[in-house]
Length: 61
Image 1 (cartoon, helix red, strand yellow):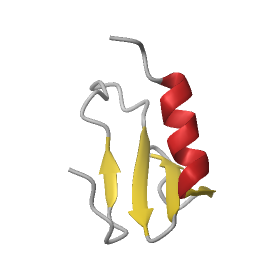
Image 2 (image 1 turned 120 degrees about the vertical axis):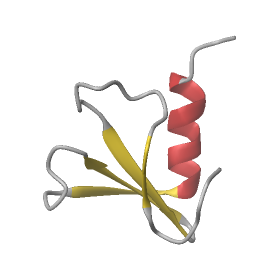
Image 3 (image 1 turned 30 degrees about the vertical axis):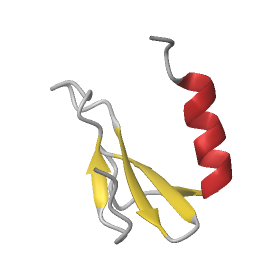
Image 4 (image 1 turned 180 degrees about the horizontal axis):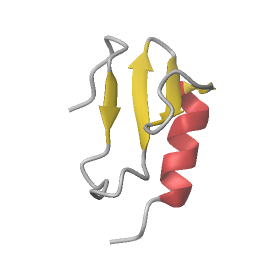
């Protein structure tokens, strides 16, 4: 489920080592941060740019 309320979500594929990113969807933008440094920097992407990134990095099934 993708929530567009701006709340942060960690991937269900993240391991127990804590080496993952968190993603938050908001209208027209996607924000990404390091789960180990939550108060640290946040990258913001326009939604089409994020969708293109996911399409090109998703493994083929």
